[in-house]
Image 1: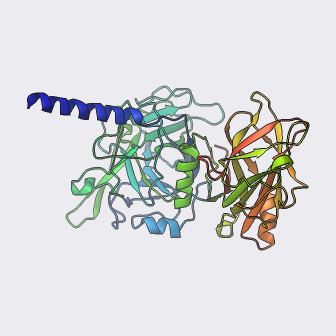
Image 2: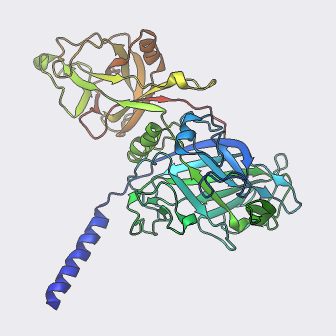
Length: 472
């Protein structure tokens, strides 16, 4: 019996080990957003929901209507934001900063980085989109020593976990001081809010150094790292700076005394207000495809509705609508002319943009030019008729493919992205809800282009993107 039990335990252990090893690691996938300071309130809609005025003084970024009564629904319905990406109505907040001389410094902005890294480890994995309205906490309200999830940097220093005391002010701009807050990447998959105020567990936890999530937190979500920036004049030593703490209340719940703690009490709160479609794009398109999307997180996007290649020569009447690859190649000696057609539903939402946000439509195609090693190889993209069927189109009945715009494709296999706003806007102006594109070889040589079709793992994508870059 003992031998059988031992063998069973060994098999279970081997299975668990195999499962851990089977999880694919990825290169970096990332995105970021900058949000200017919005307002200051003694509110905390995560820890004191529905109780405005009794929390510590918090500086809010992003959603301009965020307060103690905010909900997941209100963030999306009252979505005016100080963030540069029109899709981000998230409420971000951190405690207020007071210098040793008593001055309270309003932050200038915060920049948030989103990645697929299982911090504190270096490994990167596929992640789930941030759930609508998820609330996350990071840092320690009662911290009294360095915290690996909190970092500080000021002009003239590197990032550190200890409070900086040797800042070197810029002669013109003075000292810039940043507090970095790193959020957990493992979600319990059930609770959208932490339960810590009711004595329950947090809804998210940090992975270990190997990237493994702890038991009870099976869902990977993007790593969120917030950097809050302050301009401090000629300050060089921040050992006497303080951050706001929860106030002292009387027995009736009235504030009787404001409290402050050292910089080691640094923390931040995240209340997700990204449009669900944008959150999905960030995870599925950017991070899970190992793409650094930078600021270009889509407001909305669509995958190809239909696509197919057509070719002349002996296969002029053959349909290739079910192929996993779209091919482009100019005809020549020994080569057939091969073009590809792709149809999309036009992403919606541009009419909802606030003043100042201009809609941009971008086409993303995964593929490469062959032979490998060439650079600056051209393809043509042309808006054509919708009068074709994926399962019937051939070179004999394909719509017109002329007067195309020249773009470039890398010889490295990757997603190549093209701004086709004029083509899409013309279709919208004509009252169309869909757009068909013909894509063909733009070279005079016998190069060949292979592109993932909608039947592949790397589908063609049409994105609606808009952001006002703040230059940070």
